[in-house]
Each structure stands twice: as structure tokens, then as C-alpha cells.
Image (cartoon, rainbow, N blue to C red):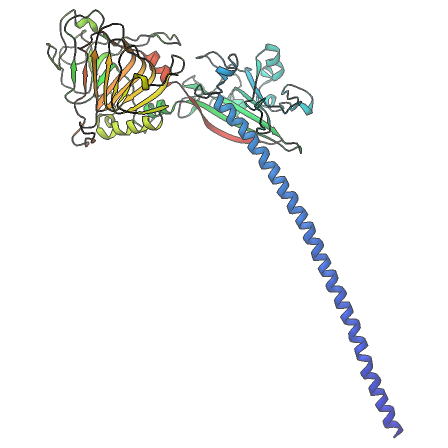
Length: 519
């Protein structure tokens, strides 16, 4: 019995020992879980801090990037004469004279300091935001120090300076000419990277032949208060949207081969048959524009798109053959066979004009493009008082009149005029540039009473719509464009390549390339 009790006590002892062991294991497990949770928590805190740091760096980097890009865009925009803050207006000596190139070493900076801050790209002090990039792109003979010594480094303030509101935090923007070496690109594929010849842009590609307009480099440095910096760079090429459209395939290529061009198979022109003192249609180049260009090749006085020789014996649709009338229509010798006549100067342009512009659909596409790129769109019927008063010889405008336009005398216009309805003018009205009378294709000198009115540049007339405004089909072809010079006999039409160039000159700078420069 004693043995039985001993055995029972041992069993009880074993039974009581088991909970002690289980409690120890649970404690270890609890401690392990707590450690695991602590490690996970620490990891999450570290990850969160890292993510916050990365986010902050990303935000700072992005902010600096956009600040630098804003500097590029300000400088690029202010190169355009259409910009209200055009450098030529705000800083008259900042840009080279019109028609001249940017010489190498001709460096311009737009600076944008915060109040009390010094921004000096030529400084050797790193706190003044020096331009350490320029000398890496150009040979020593064109270094910043050399340019500064030659007095060819100039400054202009950003539009943000003194504006009363915080602008983008870029510090400076540099504008300068480019070479193959500065681009790091062999433009002509000859003799490696040239470092002495400026690069040009012809509207489609870069070249070193001086063809087109000069390419420029625009570089910006931005710096944030936390020390983040970004430097970005554009290569830009001067361009005119309208010029590109008129002269760059696959868009319709259009040159002007006459003082007055009339399209259609049965064009109508009604010339005065007396009082020729003040009336001329002259295809000889009249270089009378602000740039003062040398006169170029002569064109026809009157150009038509019909291969049939126009009758020239007087009466409507015909031009007088004999002097004194013939001497008032001068220019290239007529190319209508046989035989071509020196005067009057009438040319068959059917082989020169693009075929799509000899169709209603092509003329309508041109109308739409000119509408979309006009400075001012006016719904007709309109008069001279509706035209923009800001037009001038040095500030031509593209004016689109959707409908009829009537000038009542002494109107002076500069730029590109588009009239889709009937165009009426008097003997004392003047226009310098291009006149497109397309759509209705109808122009009339409605009144005389004076003399001296003249159109310098070129006039282009085509009827793509009927009298109700419906567009002719290409199967129908262009209608009968019409111009009547006879009522006033005081306005003259002079071909002027100079004025054509003046109103088609680049008005904006196209971005040809963009990249970020490591800092």
C-alpha cells in the first residue's frame, strides 16, 4: 500500500511539473513575438523615413527641373517679336541687329536673383551660381573670360525680377550661338566637330552653309534653397509656322512668282484704259522694307494658272497691248508662246504652282491653316477700322477676315491679310506684305479720289467657293478669280521679296533638342 501511495505521489509530481515547463516556452514565444514586432516596426519606421527622404529628394529634383525649364521657356519666348516682353523691346541692345548672325563668343544672360541675392555667371564664387558649363563646350579662344574681355557678354533681368510675386527659382539663362563642337554632333559629316563655324537651321535640318536661320543654344540653371540644382538646355531654331507651311513638304510649297497671281481657268482682270499716271502692276523687285535688302530677281507683273495665252486687245478679261498701257505692267518677259512679249508682263504659272493649290481642296486647306495661325480673326463684313491698330512696319500681323472687307481710304496695313469674301479697297489704301484673297476670290478698287495707294509684296487670288459660300469640288475645279483695277486707277501693285520675307520672318523658336546637364 505504501508503494501504491508513493507511485501516486510521483504521478502527481510529474503532473504538476508540466505546467511549469509550458509557461517557460510561452514566455519565450511571447518575447520572440515582441522582438519580431519591434524589428518589423523599426523596419517600417526606417522604410518610412527612407521613403520620405526619397519623396523629398524627388520633389526637390522635380521642382528644380521645372524651375530650370521655366527659365528656358521664358528666354525662348522672349526671343520672339510677338512676345510682350520681347528682348528687342525690354532690352534694345540685348539682341544682335536684325538680319545679322550671333557671333561665337556673343553671350547673353537672363538673370533671376532673389531679393538681396547675387547671381553672377562669370564669378569664381560658387555661391554666386557661376556658369561652369560654357567653357566645356567651346574652345579656349571663345571662353567666357575672353567674351567678357571683348565686351560681348550682356545681361537682362527676368520678367520675375521686381514683379512683386515669386517666380520660378532658376538663377540664370544663357543664350548663345552653337557649333558642332558645342553640340557634340557632326552636322555636315566632314572633318569631325568644327568649333569655329555657327550652325544654321533651314526649317527641316541643321546645316553649316548659312542656309535658313541661325540655331541657338539656351541653357538654364535652377537652384533651390535646400541646395538642389538642375541645369537643362535647348537647341532652338528660328521658324515661322506660315513660312514652314508654305515652303516645307509635304505641305503645299508656295512661292510668289508675280506681283498679282490669279488662279482658275477663266480669270477676270479689268484694267484702266486711261489715266495711267498712278497705276502700275510691277513685277520688278522693289526692296523698300525696313531691312533694306538688295533687290532680287524680277517676277511677272501678272501671273495666271491657265496655259492659254490671255487676250490682250482691250475689254474686260483683257489687257491693253500697246503703250502707254503696256509700260505700266512690267516685269519678266511673258512666257506665253508664241511669241513671248516683253510688255505687258503676264506669266503662265501653271507649271510652277503646286497642283494641290490649283484645286479647291488645297486652297481650303490653306485657308484653314492661315485661320489657325492668325494673330487676329475678324468676322465680316469688316472695315479698315476693325483692323488691329498695333500693326506697323516693324510689327506686322497676320489678319484673317472671315467674310468681306472694305477699306474706305488711307488704311495702312502690314503683314499677311487673308480675306475669304470680297475685298474692296480705294486708291489711297496701302498694304505691305502678302494679301490672300481666297475663298470668294474677288477684289475691286471701289473708289478713286486720290493716288499713291500701293500694295508692296504679292497678292494671291483664288476662288474655291461659290457665291453662297459652298466649297467647289476638285472635279469642278477653281472658280473664276476676279480683280477690277479700273474704278480708282490710283493704286499700284509692286512685287517685293523684301516685304514677303519681312512678314514671313521667324516669329517663334522651335525646340530642336532638349537634355539635362549633370551637376
